[in-house]
Structures are given as C-alpha cells and as structure tokens.
Image 1: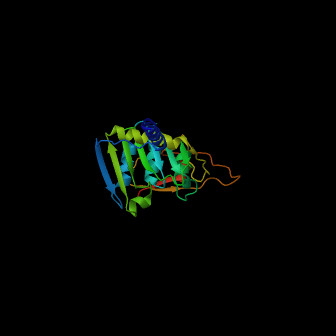
Image 2 (image 1 turned 45 degrees about the horizontal axis):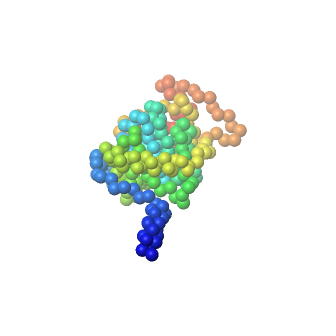
Image 3 (image 1 turned 90 degrees about the horizontal axis):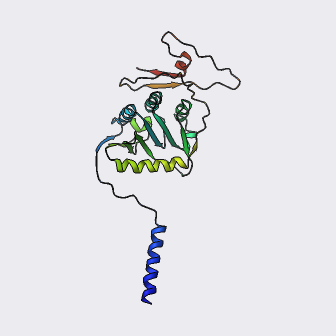
Length: 237
C-alpha cells in the first residue's frame, strides 16, 4: 500500500510538471538601463536614437504604430541595409494613421499577429543586444499625451535572448500584412532622410485611384525623385 502511494505521488508530480506551463527563469540584473516617462519625456527620441544606431537587425512587436519619426527612422535603417521585421496587432490592418502600409511598401516585412485577442507587446530588439520595452506605444499620443514608460536595456544577454525567443514565437503564428496601397513608397528610389535632431511632420499622399495611370518618376534639380517628394514631404517648422 505504501509503495502504491509513493508511485501515485510520483505520477501526479510528473503530470503536474507536464500540465504546468514553463515559467521564465530568474534573470540576474546586468548591463545598463535607461528609463523615459511620458508625456514629453524623450521616449520617441530614445527609440529613434537606437534605430539609428542599429547596424544589422531590428525586430519589432507592436500594438499600435503611428509614430512618423519612428517610421522615418526605420525607413532610413532599411536604406542602410538593416534587416527589419515588424509583427503588429491585427488592428493595424484598419487603424487610420497606421504606418504599416508605409514601411511595408518600402520593402520592410510586416506581419500581423492574429493568434491573440490583442497583440499588446511594445518591443524592439536591435542587433540582438539592445532591448526596448515598456507601456510606450510607438505613437504620437504616447509621446505627447499619455502617461507611459519606456526602458532601453543593454548588456543583459539572457534577458534579450528570452525576448528573441518570444519574438520568434509570435512571428511563427503571424500572417503577412496586405497593404491596401494608401501610403505608397516606391523602392529603390526612396530618399534617405536625416532627422538632424528635429522631429519631422510627415505628409503622405493617397495611392492612385482605380484606372488612374501612375505618374512617371522625374528628377528635380536636387536629384531626388519629385514624385516621391510629393508623396512624402518632411517639413521642418
């Protein structure tokens, strides 16, 4: 009887391990961390700075993505040859001011996470070494109106590796974003834009109407495609 009880206890223990989801291991504090608080606490500038410093890869998990300065920084990184993959919440298919179409049409792979009720992550990983996360959505409202926080962490590889595995999980069950063409940027002629420390206001024209012939690209005196200039104007007040 005693032996049976021991065997039963062992079986229940094993079943308990199988049925319980694996939890993350404790991670020791390492490296450096910066924290930014909104409104108007410099979070957008910090994200743009880290995007500009990236040399190889940028992986993105985002719920809302409407920030024009961040989108422009990503396009600039894409022009430098940085590999970028964005996994966004399904609401980005229809969100009015989403920059998903802009970066997708520039050639950046964009995926939509339809696996969850809400894909509520706000994460960027640069060069598999820098981690950005927090409550801060990549939006103008998060910068200028909301109470948010943003962490920029470097030098904690075990933590970054966990976020990388999580990114791969969400990427694996996501589907390609299908652009409706409202915010079109033709590659490879999209000009690299230097922010010069100033936050641009981005103005985008709508795509061509049905049956309307797209204008042929023309070069202005500056050598920049003037058709693209009309589609993407960066205005510095």
